[in-house]
Length: 245
Image (cartoon, rainbow, N blue to C red; front, side):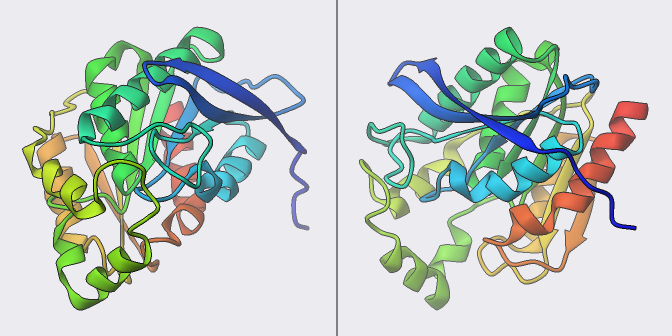
């Protein structure tokens, strides 16, 4: 028999930020969570928190409350403002993490898709005492590589106006200047997609190796944009494993 999951309730939240407020959604069930941590989910470049709705709904229905929010400068989101450099992504990620920890969760697992994976990593490195684990979905080293191909160039043209501020290609070029920290004591899961034409499996493996010896790599049959929904069961199994460790 298919299990019936409890209803998930959404709460609109406004997270204090240097840009004013970050527009967010908090997902939870009616019954108080018995889990030792909540989840902070971060979306990819040119996207918005809507892209993580299926993942947030699924994980919160299994007992893990989730916070999603819109990064600054993303036109499909509600935060507004302008995006010019990757440090703004790190800043927003830290602001959301500190808000979630202060208001809803004793500890937090940071989860990021593509660009959001960098936010998940950097926020955990800056506030390790508040974090119980880090997961990245189709996040790899040198993210500009995938956009230098003909298919990548077509994607850039199609989504060129989805960001307020710097051009997408200029923004991606700046990522190589970010120094990725090691996270030697945290559980880490890096998910790669075999059908991902933006971030290769090898790029994900390179990133995982930089983060330290505690990483795990999961390779799924998914494209780049489908990764949040295709990763649900893998993430749930990993969360249960670190919860029981």
